[in-house]
Image (tube, rainbow, N blue to C red; front, top):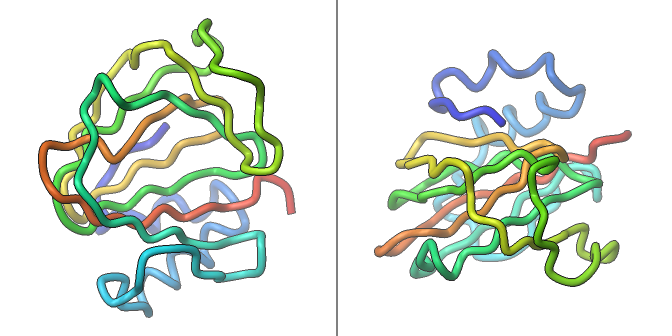
Length: 150
């Protein structure tokens, strides 16, 4: 898991060969103008989900993990209180892993809550359980999905 400011995002380009596609998209796209939903960047290998809405409470938020995708969650407006816990420490699965949606949910509580204001981002890898859209206010964020294997 990584948390940082958008000004430092280029420092992470070497982590994955497709991260540069995301960083270029962020630089050249008016993310605030995109409608809610999925926007393809590089087919199913890289895309962004635009989310707007009222946040949920910490009690409502479920930790989740992904196997196929890395998340780069960039807050555009509001403050997202993202939860995090190492996947290896999660014990309370909710149902099975949904391969269609690439998601597994957990009842476990986060180990940490990361207060993430606008122009800050979190990178969550497959070994990170995380939750988002946690706020008492309106949130607007971009969740970039990057295929682990290309």
